[in-house]
Image (cartoon, rainbow, N blue to C red; front, side):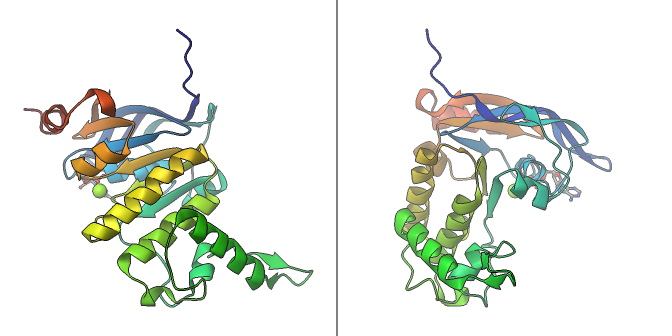
Length: 247
Ligand SMILES: Nc1ncnc2c1ncn2[C@@H]1O[C@H](COP(=O)(O)OP(=O)(O)O)[C@@H](O)[C@H]1O
Ligand SMILES: [Mg+2]
């Protein structure tokens, strides 16, 4: 049978991470393909956030390889990971509260014009408007101050920012943990729509309902070890729960 699946955009090979004597991740391997959503699940302390931090350049793995589009990369910093086209969305809505929406989208990577590198506010505003429209993030305006927005609107902006910059991969670590029910549904719609952008998406979530709604595959982590990977359509909550808990 012809394999129509795309090549992996991200390959993690035998990743191991120890913090002093604590082994957070042990011999972990996983592929993520462009256009798919992979969910990473596991109990508290299983090593999910550590893996996200390794892929996003916050922590270096103790041993193991990270490949992007088949080429080994060394992710020495978060800046480096961003240069490689990897963006992260955290649960704690990591935006600059006192700044406007459009400035948040471009924070640290502002658009400029002319020899004196003046901020090109017009270009940033119009790109922001285009993006929030496309992702259906409903905000009063691109000029709104972040602190005046709801949690759901803010997370929409964080996802929009990741979407704008990510060329390869978006990592989401419990992106809806701080949101209400309606806001969560909205954020899930936004994440699901990212599938069409042909980048890899890796989402950490403790909500199995969410995982089953959003993901194409589910990877289970227990005490730093990869317990197994299932196609979401071919498994159920009972199986995933028993993989998570080991009983
Ligand atoms: N910076 C750190 N220093 C020391 N131990 C850490 C650090 N980060 C995580 N750990 C430990 O690594 C393990 C995995 O943590 P984490 O990746 O945050 O799990 P999860 O996100 O699945 O809840 C835990 O035992 C945690 O205490
Ligand atoms: Mg975590």
